[in-house]
Image (cartoon, rainbow, N blue to C red; front, side):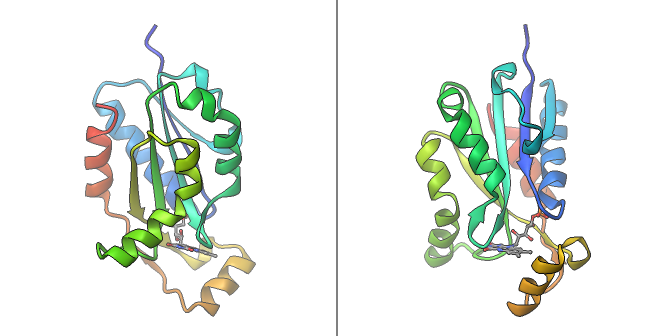
Length: 163
Ligand SMILES: Cc1cc2nc3c(=O)[nH]c(=O)nc-3n(C[C@H](O)[C@H](O)[C@H](O)COP(=O)(O)O)c2cc1C
């Protein structure tokens, strides 16, 4: 039986879900059966041949529902092909300081899934999609609205991952 690949994600304002859909489309174009699901639906990982997990960053961390999911499933996930994507806005340049800062975002995840390859994608700030609290924090830190998603980078990664 050809089990599907799971692309599961955690989001607050939608941009990570849209990236997950794009990854799913590229995998489907490669001929894989694919399911894209929010992690809040608590998918059963044994139903899949491989799993791609992605989260938005909030205050330096993956979202808690995705961390909990990995904590609950990492023994199974470590027995199968797994890859990670992180969606963020800060620390996006290629200098060493920036690289180290963004790698710190996923250090707790890499402890649980040490063999999983990972990628970082810049995301989107859209105040209209934020909760009042998140909008307030964003204004305090003088965040600006912009869509920094690099669809070519996203499709290129999805075209080669799990090869
Ligand atoms: C309240 C708040 C906190 C954030 N904290 C960080 C952060 O610590 N580091 C970072 O690189 N990006 C941070 N971001 C940017 C988000 O990760 C980025 O906008 C991402 O695309 C959001 O994904 P989502 O639309 O799926 O929720 C933050 C955004 C908000 C609104």
